[in-house]
Length: 294
Length: 290
Image 1: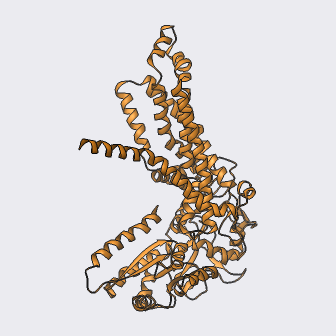
Image 2: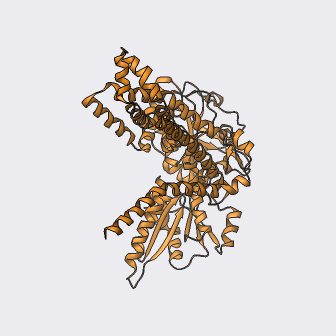
Image 3: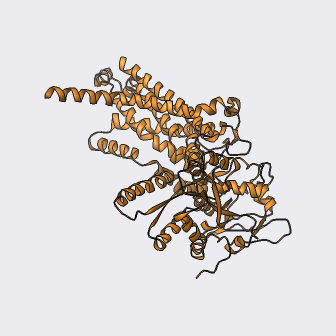
């Protein structure tokens, strides 16, 4: 329901804007920006902050998910699509057939934290262990398999919390942790939003989940992650996402329809400038490169 | 002048009258059209009805809907198990025992129950029932058949109560008076005269309740745990057909196989609810003829 509201409201707002601006000589340029729910908060913050930078440009931001943004790019109905996963070859082909050449910009990074209940004693997990927990055929189904007993979780069962199968987060975690052709175990609780995952894990001692670092609260545990057995265990933080040491940090992308020009180019340049990148940092994501922010 | 008004009103009423038919045919044509490419193409009926592997976005997509069908059936079944006796009992009390102010208050309260939005029910399931079930039964998670079934049962109760009460009220008082004149007790009047006479109406009430449960989306999405799983106990998480459509349609590329598979779930839901409602309708018609 929320998604529908997010899609409809900006259209209405846009309609009002278009009608109101009709008589103006200096017509305001409107940039259509749609896609990833992960990036939605940041994209809205950018749009608001940019209004102060350039009052002649209005940015209309809508969510709906990476898939929605990418389909809109293919259909040529947006200027900028937000995505928390890369466009597939087949999608780029489809866009070219429609005369749209998508150009990719990495605008930041998002560390995917593994979330545990605050009473869970586990402090670090390896990628192989995560694969054993989440991947089909994985043998880790009980907390005792990891050598711990979790207070408040008498059944010892690991309650898997995952995402709906078309979310960018779901796809990225699968590709990075489970491998390209692997599948998730069936039977996970598939939540419809990053925040819902953290909420459920917070209230369920037996649970494990994964979600963007920006959704962390004080009442959940976030174990560090090692790539290989015996390697360094890296905490999920903005710093480790920027320097690339945290193994499950994904790039956040914006796609423009063709090489950006005019208002869209100015907007993209501003997003990638220190000013724009400090906005993304404030929202709990990592800038695409190290930045000094006040 | 009055002639035109008369004519206009007649056209208006006619349009209103047939609009329901137009819409239902329109909806059926629409979902069939969207799902048809998938049904004729990648769908394997064997896999659809016997496999639980619902992985439409995988590199090797599989479309097993068994767990979703079982999920919907188990939640609806469990809901009816406790909701039917509850609703019929409530209807009996309101129609046969309660009088005056009690009766009116109860009727209003039952109707108010029907006005609670489903997302609010879902919220109750998530944030009140979930911790309660964990505490009382000592299970790891309270989102599952039990939680969704209880919520759904409460949601279906008002419609069943209202229709069952109408059916009981439709039994002519002369029946009751005749039975009482023969020396029947109040209990005998209800069990041997009123219930048999309103049997069809009561059955229709139950079927409409089942239809309501089958189609419910938001509350089930929130309270069922939304996990692809064949339940072995009432505490297991399950996933419903409706919830799957609601959760996955938003991010899907229009016209793709995943899109088509979701519309195929829609066709299945439509056919089942249509059959349930049709049966209810035929049953009610049966009562009118008598």
